Length: 314
Ligand SMILES: Nc1ncnc2c1ncn2[C@@H]1O[C@H](COP(=O)(O)OP(=O)(O)OP(=O)(O)O)[C@@H](O)[C@H]1O
Image 1 (cartoon, protein in one colour):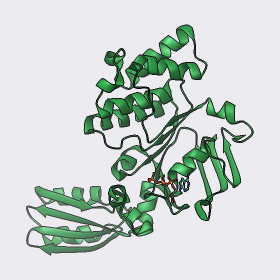
Image 2 (image 1 turned 30 degrees about the horizontal axis):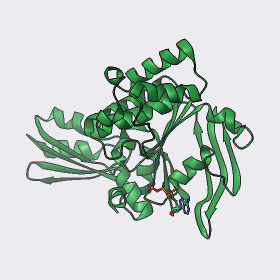
Image 3 (image 1 turned 120 degrees about the vertical axis):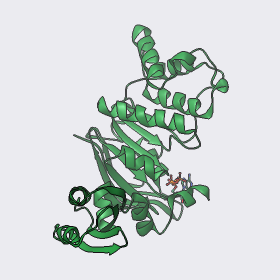
Image 4 (image 1 turned 135 degrees about the vertical axis):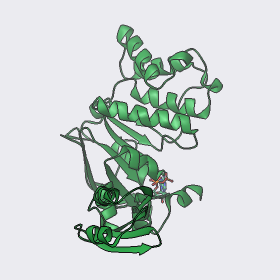
């Protein structure tokens, strides 16, 4: 099932075009990472998808229903985690969840059960009766996420949910996302942190200046821009026989020897590291291995000419 289907969306602010004929889709059960520098249009896209703003032209279907015609029904099945923390500071953690649960029509025993389960999911069960002002930034973020989850949405949309938090809370949030996804929740995740996308999402969409400029798995995107991987081995006995054997591996372009270091250039995506190591092992001990793969950061830089982290610090 296609959970989100965006066709040819345009959104203008005066003369500025924030979404310029955007097309994309998310299938049920996916975690899709949406990357882009500041001003790329990510938040505008999320706001269009959740009915917060109107778009000028194009079509959006969510759960295979037209968004504009079925907005109320669709919104009841979406959880939205905004960039800003939108919790009530004068309500306890539990009261915050009860409030959001009631908005989604939960009552009585079901509400109680959902509040408890959601607090446990984000690791705040022991803090249910505390005010968020007593929480660290990371705990407030986790409560913010819990508020979007209390009604068990089929689709969770997260707009940079880990900005400015400690590593422990960040890992907790990433683990929670994986857990939810395993239970069947479809997730659209925007972030400036490339390593988060690399560890969470199978598919990545890169936006820049209102356009989608790349869409694919991390491996697909990386293979589009780089055609080579470098492998460096330090081994006990780099004999000529071994070098010859390495040269015969399919996709190996170059094998050179500098002292005891074997320098290998392989076609990207050929998956040659295992084969190289197996051959090297036949010839004695391996002291060190370095494999230099192009990263998603390289893809981003090549396509947008910008670094994500620099963009974040602007
Ligand atoms: N309400 C608005 N009025 C005018 N221009 C806007 C408005 N909202 C967004 N924009 C402009 O639209 C463009 C896209 O903004 P958007 O917030 O969607 O980017 P983003 O990719 O989410 O960036 P960030 O990573 O900083 O959140 C920007 O140039 C922004 O200045």
